[in-house]
Image (cartoon, rainbow, N blue to C red; front, top):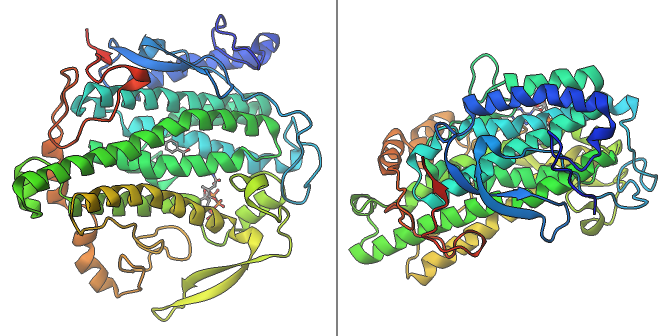
Length: 476
Ligand code: BYC
């Protein structure tokens, strides 16, 4: 295992001390990052002591250290997973050849585009969550939010390192731009749609961690297959940190469901108004939040048929998650894939695409399967409590803004409908203004150790075997 140098100004396991030019360039970027963090990172908590984990190694076991840190003092650094000896290209036209330690000139702009897109999402999510700390449902949750925020900051470092180390002046300029675009900014928005959506309440935060961070898992896994080995290694280590973010989403939503079921039992009612009188989240309201964040996150996979996807697969730039173990044909030069597209007459038809062009859709379908796991778990909770209601993922065609189904009005099952009907029924499908007002009214900050807001059940256990009433965030 390669050791992390923590004595350096920028902690790293890439031997930065031996590359003075790169070190200087990154040390030049570092204060800009800190300025950005101060302005757009968690608002108002700079002096709080937070119980955080920090990477101290890159192997799967014992890679993290837990301790109390003030967020601005968090040691953001550059950590790549250890190289795999004699690794060869796992897919595409150069299948079986040795992986690259430098970016081949002819693929430079494609790589840069993907790395910039990946890098852009990391600070975007921190910006989206800028104000959430003020309305935390517990100290446990507040700590989890901050853990996610500092790690997204580190993931930005991961991409900035690759840009600086391998893309020269262009890379340095792109790294500056990553701090210049801002989530929701009218003039300089973040690149991908979902990362410009406001996250103003914790129900949205948990949905984001469940659905959007899961897109992160799939995209990072695809880039972890890349023939450009430094990118593959950095993504492999990012995935280690990413798992906790999805855990926060899944358990957060599970705890909301649990609390709602308790209230349904207490009141003997399933009536949303009755549940709301008791300060919990009625399940139809939760369903509308799921509809919103799931449909938005589906767009993050890009178009069903994409020449970009075909090129990045052919060139060995971006593979499929678990390419080696999940697929037989790693070249996909002759195979095809069947997709469903609008028939232009208000219906659905099957179309056949070259497999390489359909890679975004292949990824999206595996993602949908992965999303269903949590739904099954929550539905089991609901069923065990004796209720018939089921939470559901809407169809992949519903409310899409990218790809074949962009701006095609459909119902939740994906049946094409008229625009008029779509607009009429939409308030029942997505959070309405009054839903959002109600959720906002629940967002009262709870910071007494061990206490939870009334709309969410406590988690099963604390962080790193600590008790639930541990003071995970200490204010000064
Ligand atoms: N919104 O051929 P197309 C994460 C653009 S999340 C706006 O359809 P392509 C995280 C696309 O960029 C993971 N624009 O798709 C989670 C392209 O624009 P240009 C983030 C969109 O290129 C939580 C054009 O449409 N990582 O890590 O095959 C917290 C045509 O594109 C959208 C990545 O995404 C959209 N939704 O692939 C923190 C990995 N979708 O270049 C972090 C890197 C597409 O023609 N990115 N467009 O101007 C990629 O692999 C690909 O860029 C995409 C799309 C999957 C996004």
